[in-house]
Image (cartoon, rainbow, N blue to C red; front, side):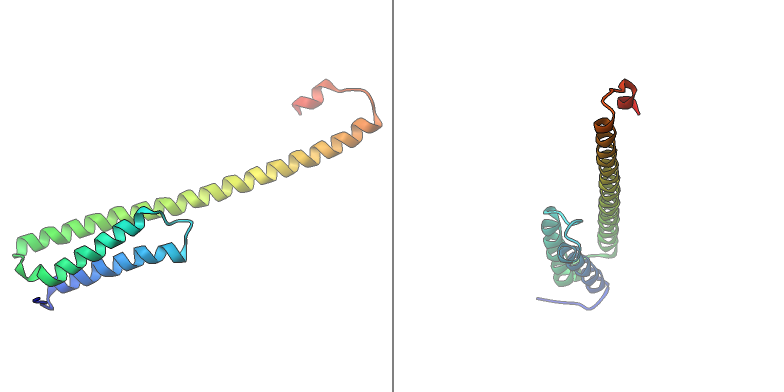
Length: 129
């Protein structure tokens, strides 16, 4: 094992931090986490180990291509995570609106029931209000 503390170590360390943070999302915010995150965090950690141990063999062009691939993967990962958070917020808003509408409908139903008990006549247009 030949570990060189150069640019390959920095890239591998950065990717391992991202892999660990992806795995920690499962514990910090489980509603945002998905099952496939464990797979991708494992791949990030495996990739970082390979880059740290064998990165000294890469010539500058291959190393630059690895850097580009890492930043491309991280941009997709951050966009995916951002969309998950936005979807979760949107679901909370929809559920909140549904609960408010449901409560209003129940209040209208109980008030209409009281009115109907007092007055036996049926108002057809009450349905459409």
